[in-house]
Image (cartoon, rainbow over all chains, first blue to last red; front, side, top):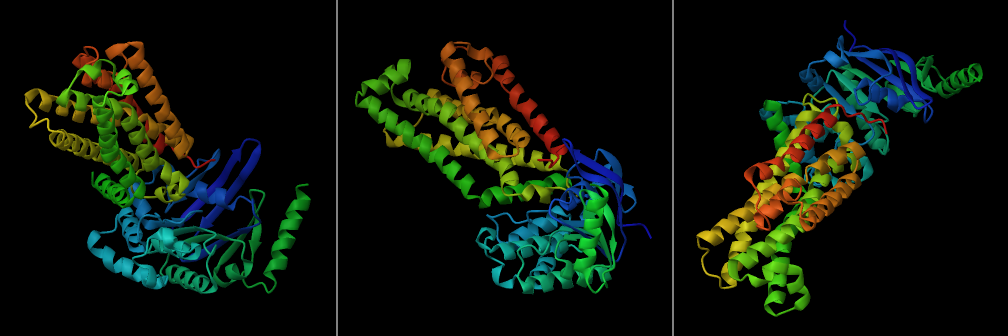
Length: 240
Length: 253
């Protein structure tokens, strides 16, 4: 089956710093692929490259088998993402934000009310439907951004540190939402430094360090934290 | 075309809900009318400083005096307000961080940028109409009587000048995009205001595109239709440059 997302030999430098270094990565349908790494490892830069927010110095990205620069615009309607800031216009209510996000993903207007109701219910934003997003807590703004990224049931989902600012209840809702979409066949790339959370949802864990992918971890490893630091330490030693 | 319609609806919704937009609209309509009314009363009362600032206008009365004062305020203050509004329309996406949500969408970013500019232009035309109506009402309140053909022409010129003034602020959209924030747009707007004012004072006349609409509307010097239309070159170029910059945008800083 065609990979939902594929990167090959992807590199990008900022000045003399190699932020992403020859990364090759695949996100398969029905798979949660977690990207773990320390702060500054290059996870967010890699995700920006994968979604066309920055252009690579070398390497290619393809979505559903089509290179990014030839991807028909309509195909992006089957992609959902949260990179850094959530989709939350401060002057709009939660509902208005979700309706707008759905339209921008070309969802048929007649389907939007039900879709928004389901998204509000899934991320438990019911009490805030008519609240302006500027009045939401950071955690609820993040829930709104996740709802906007997931509500149209995309085939490819890219989430950068999605559990940031979420309370424990929000983390569980996010986990369930991700797993539901994985079971429905979506390919999901998620970055995180919460290893215990990653272990609960990931089918594949890739470790990133200094812009390079340095190996994988088994999600069922009993001491994931130890395995992670061993991999990072070994890479640091090897590249001294 | 369908995606442009969707982008237009999204941008219109943001603009309609925005406090910044409401404030700037109020400033443009009520602020300019109040400022012009104040100047008018000061001139009537014989305030010498104000009379000196009005120059040749001080000899006018009735509708010509009122409309010319409003045009003077609009060409400087109005331009600043339009520039701030446009800087906000584009700059807020970078400041609020929502720009990342405008990537990886089935609607091209150049279409979103065009939608922003079209909504801005539509709002500018509505604001120009509201300002013209407000000045018309002000004239009636001041007892100038219903506008005759000459006064109606002046009010028409005020409308056209306001729309041209809004267009002259379009470089702020490009600057905001290149600078990824509000400040570059606001700084560019201030620069345009200064250049336009210097152009008027220096007597370069209608060949100065940033000053030509104001010189034409206030009849300071003869301005040909060609000269007036030439002033559209800068907004047209900056419109294209802005959509291209959005199309090529990279979030690399």
